[in-house]
Length: 289
Ligand SMILES: Nc1ncnc2c1ncn2[C@@H]1O[C@H](COP(=O)(O)OP(=O)(O)OP(=O)(O)O)[C@@H](O)[C@H]1O
Image 1 (cartoon, rainbow, N blue to C red):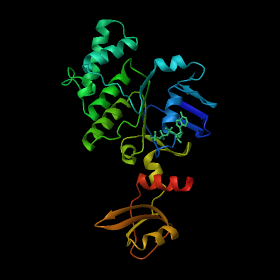
Image 2: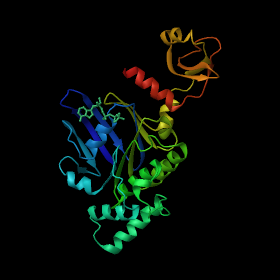
Image 3: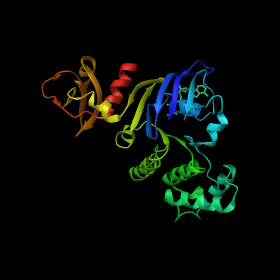
Image 4: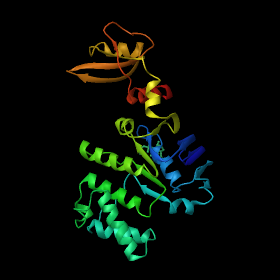
């Protein structure tokens, strides 16, 4: 279990990027959902001991991470937002090199670990190709492979699905879900669908604060019976936005279709729909704005 308690981090420019964050993160895939600038990367870097919080505590399986950062680093796999290491060497050689850095010095053991990870991340067929020639999805899978070296207890992946096509996104999420069967995996993302189906638990953060935490389905259930959908004209949209809690709007057949949060039917022609995590997300962000 990873326990975060009352974490605060204010940068020199005065931005309060982490504001009293407390979370219990068990084994499994944990989604950290928030818009750009919400403070996801700041929190990830703090957990990874790449920066220190101003106050608060972090414990991994009972070990005080801020007092013993080396102990955490030995058990951590980290894929930052911009991994940025794509040299013209083969995936096999590069992963082997990272394995040496990670302390896997015995050749036989290292070979076994590297090959197993290339299989696990579906890169075995492409192992002799230069990482520089990989597609975005392959690079991210390579990033996951390096994060898994040394059998970490905690894996942190920062926005790994950004810019991937739907196929590659699914492949990556499935890979993370499988890894999450045994270790703690924190997945930061601004894509709501990344969290809905696969994450056992999640937190939505906005402006550095935890807005909601728990099981996605439980958060969705709190909105049951209170999400209404209907079509409006472009001209009427601003009026609806002023009068109601409009959570989202998308064009369907050229006309805005909007989701409204309301205890009763807000307007003629609106019908109740099953809530989704996107409704939770927009409602929370609105409330925090
Ligand atoms: N080193 C830094 N110095 C000053 N301000 C920073 C620093 N790093 C981040 N910030 C600011 O802190 C806030 C949170 O940024 P952070 O990168 O943690 O958010 P994020 O949720 O990861 O967003 P993104 O998805 O855009 O990376 C932003 O306002 C950002 O500009």
